[in-house]
Length: 558
Image (cartoon, helix red, strand yellow):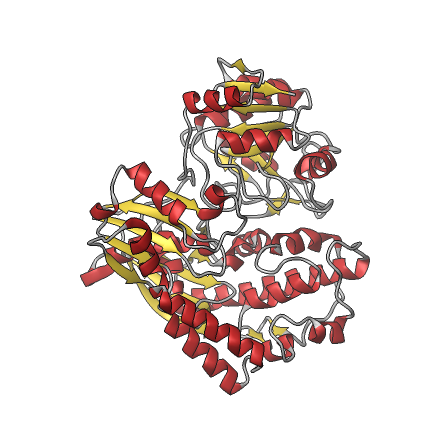
């Protein structure tokens, strides 16, 4: 059976994947190909990339699976929220809800667009409940036979948070907390209040939080310790969805975008993160109690909160945790594509996912063609790992473009910017001269998995850079560029069997410096998607302060 999974909601992060007989072959977000950050349009470029990789035509696809319910479900829930006062009933809100419903209905939730783009097909069009698609995407790649599954995001159709039980390849629904009682909605409202872009810049709040101190009281907006947590959405919205005036009435005026960050903003960010962590912890406790499983699978946009994930794991509430690397909405394509395998009492094969290198790759011929097109001087390398390690040891900042692109928001050594973690000034150098982003945002360490225990107190199996843990006290001065202000880091543990070239780069760096760790951040500039093609890499390299580009077997310096 050949299935295509699609995330398409006109909201954000459209994506597609292709699965053959239960094996995930390829997955990519539309933004990586279109170059439009968080692209919400129908992912026709991503679908075509899936077909091309698999070497099939649209006529050969058996099912096209969308990770969303049909739009009537969302429309009916919004109307219910308006009538019951859970959402503010305003002319603009009702207009936007109705327009969205009519647009998605006209498109048959994307099925009509698929047929128009790819011609008449025999494939069945399937619409999978959004949180079920999230749950399958987490449990179906966890490798856990028995697991609690928790989905937390801004919203699905009617869902905000849901708990499921995965067992013997099947998934059973336990409970749903309906929107707008949403942890993601709470976090996004304060992201907006702090002058950032909601549903996009929540990372910035998480990165800013350790600079703050306890004291800001947000009890007016959320009770994180209740079982389940309770977001006071009506008060948060204060008559208009997205309005910050209710927050301002409690904690002061909102921050203007791009303005200075003061101590009050830092303290509010600290509180937002703290309340979020407590709400997530409460939900996980409930899930463990109801499923009686000490394995945990997480998905949904809130599951990208690496700080909270790390605290859940280190708390002892669970024994093992799996966070699907594309935990946000782009990842529902994976769950949607596997949904047909549950039909008729079927079971998921549940193969443990150990890497996210699921996107496009470019051979040396394609890379060299791009370099020649731009008339660049370049050298061929016999050993990119050794060359890269030598440059890093000399303090150079590298663009690293190798193999298949990662699926999900993290660069994991395929489309990365790399630097020396030993230099305490490197964070500022890369933020200012390369990424052009805010000073407080931290960078992550990629380390050999077998050395992780020497550097981290926990999270020693973290292949997707999605768990935050404390750096051992004696190592913080060794790798200051990847140690955050609170002593934490968000590690990627690199396995030789999974990414041998990247592992060897880190190993070669360790031979020269004694430190089996490199500083890793995504290969993109602020506001842009991670690079996909050699052309993207060349353009980004020459638009930033990187010193060298190691792309395939070639080396370019400025």
